[in-house]
Each structure stands twice: as structure tokens, then as C-alpha cells.
Image (cartoon, rainbow, N blue to C red; front, side, top):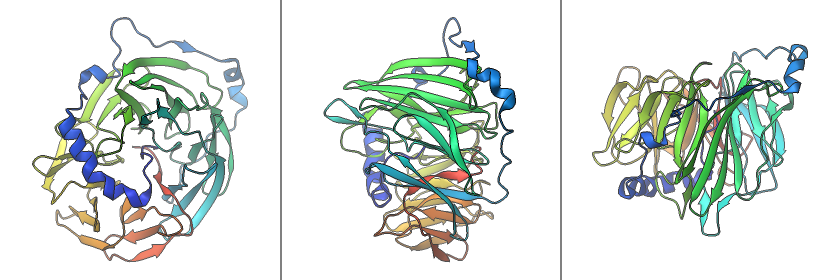
Length: 385
């Protein structure tokens, strides 16, 4: 996965309340008009690039991890950034560095809404440099070049998601202007770029992120605002999730939407949306079924555990673990612990910098351990949704 917006860890909670209010008051359109479902004649075109002919000589895909990891991604404000894989005991398993893609904007008065330039499969973290080269990092320290995508510029960004089995990559190329973005989506083989499918394109105030893959036959796309001026909830992240066929872009399910925007990154269990008017939250399955609902005290970021039994709600005071396995609330994890991802079903990870060190908390006991790395949460391994 690779769906965290570019908001630094200490700022995430402060921006959340204003973000959610802005989305409700703006009447943001996340209707089927922004669906990746193609209309009329199919736009998917398959091609096999010459490099795909050599696929038989490519090494077999790596094995899925047996131990889960969280991914920390360094600041995008510097010329280089780090990616670090962290285990639930707080140990940094592997780290790599990369050149940072250039800052992208919507003309001179608005910022483009883009996620961190990373994705995760069930075995590796993938990260993009400034030239559009996608590299990989494995927990054992193995790293290398995976593929290339269109290079970033001051007005263009490529956003990608690698399939859980490391076989396919979905890429959105967004060209930003003062009025929004032109978005095109394609899917191809990760190794060699063969079996290329041009699936969808649109222009407007909304764009798409490939959030991840649910299995290998369901691609998850987030509907996001193309640009933002000053922040606010839903200024900088997914409003709605579309589950689509990765071969045709036909939409199968819709999670969230205007009345219940997505409140945090999804996991294998689904996603959480929040009714910001009535202060209620819903846990949604990948077939768009409401698994359960619960009340919230305020508009909060919501992170669902991989098994779906718990939700980490993050507000200005810290992280509250709601809806435990028995349907009860588990309480607050220490002041100043602002979770931004689950590593496994019992441990949450917070991002940070040199002044606010990242930490991992065990949600039942509240026990915390520091992490000797910095950055914002960029997902977890295994990365399948």
C-alpha cells in the first residue's frame, strides 16, 4: 500500500478536524462520475514490450514475509529520503535511501494532493526516486531496481501500487494544472512492463490514487481532491474507495463517499468511514457491507486493524483503541502517541522526526518502545488489502 498523504506526523492530527469539516461543507462530488468504470468502447489495450520477452529469465518472485513490518518513510522536504522496515518489537530490519521526487503543485496558488511515493507487497517495500525509478527493499536488506514509471516534474506525479504477489503494478499518472488534474491509469507487469493495459483517463477537480490490491484480481483506487489550498479534512486524502477489475477498470464496489468519507488507510479487513455530521463511524468490508457501526466523540483519523476487530482513533490527545475483539473499548494509549498504521493486530506504529521519535505501542497493555528511525507511516508488510 501507499496511501498516506504528504502531511508530516506531528501535523496529521491537527489538520484532521479542519480537513473533515472542509469536505462536508464543500459538497465534494465523489459520485459515479469519477468512477474508473470505462464507458462505451473499451479503452484497455494490451501490449507486450520487448523487455517482457526476457521475463523467463527473471528471478522468481520473493516469498511473502512471515513476520509483519511497518514502513516508515522519511521527509519529502529534503533532497533525499529514507525508507525503513520496522518489526513489532521496535527493531529496524532494513533501511534504504532514495532521491526525493520534486514538489508538485497546481499552478502557483495550490498544492497538488499526492501520497508518499511508496507501496508494499506481501514481501517488499517499493519506493520511487526523482527520475521515476521504482526500487525495492526487503526485510533482509536486499534492495534493487524493480521498474520505471513516468518521472515526476513540478506539475506531474506518478502514483503506484504493486500487487501482493509482486507480479503487477498499477500506475496513475497525474498532470496538475490550476484547475485540477488530468489523470490516466495503466496496469502492467512489474518485471519488464509487459501486458500493458491503458485503463482509464479523466480531467477535473478529482483524481485517483492506486491504494493497493485486494488479492490479485481486485485493484483498489481512492478518489481524492486533485489540489488543495491550505489544508482541511479531506483536503489531502481519500474520500471514497473503488474496488475495480484490474483488467478492465470496471467498478465492482464503492466504499465510503460524500455522506461517510474514508477516515484512514484500509487494511485486509476493509476500511472505516465517518459520518461527520452525526459523529458515527462504520467499518466497511471490501464488498461495501457495513460490518458494524459505533459512535465517536469527535472527528478523528481511524485506522482499522488487519483482522478488522479493532480501530485506532487518533485525535489531538493521542490514540484511542475502540471496538476490541469483544466489542468493547480498550482505552487510550499514552498522551502524545499518534498512531498512523498497524503493524499487526496488536501493535500500532507512530511516525516522527528527531524531536518526536517514532514509537510502537502494544494496544492491550499500552506498553511502548522507541524506534531508531524517522518518518511518516507508509504502510505495512504484508501489504495486500
